[in-house]
Amino acid sequence: MGSDVCVECTNCDAGESYLLGVGMNYFDTYELLPRLPYYPNGRVRQSYSPRYVAYIQYGARKKVMDILDYHHVHSQDVAHRLYACPKCNTLHGRFYVRLEYDDCAVYELNFRCGKCRTPLVEASEDAIESYACKKCGKQSLVRGAGMPLWD
Image (cartoon, rainbow, N blue to C red; front, side, top):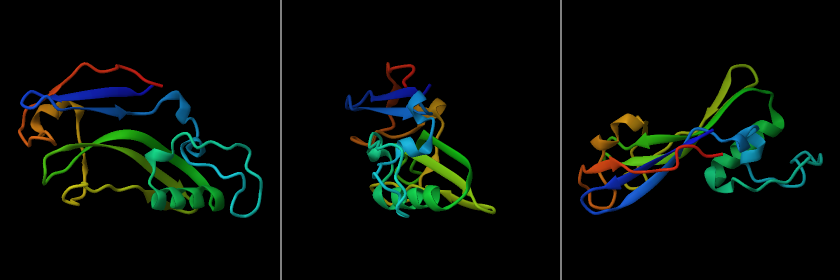
């Protein structure tokens, strides 16, 4: 089960919700990627599932699909995570993917702030109050009422 963190600004009433973790639909990385009916090598795929297209952007999605199709993946970690921009001091929700494949090769998604392009760092949901509101810029965020678990 995944969890949901809702954040509200006491200054401007802006709010945002962040999914964290993984739900039951995430049993296989292939379920997170858009599916074509054929593998690039011509083999027929077993299923067609475009459900989570929005979570992995095109360039990264293509790289992940290539690794899954052409390499021996022996470890994978996928989850919604909470990140922060150290320069803007704002929170961001991102979909994290890490694949270990072949002999010690690793592919991991890294993220940048959409405003200043600074690399994002993983944030703790316990420190929400220390971050600034994206709308007004004030450090006035509080945890709101959210959905405790999701699938």
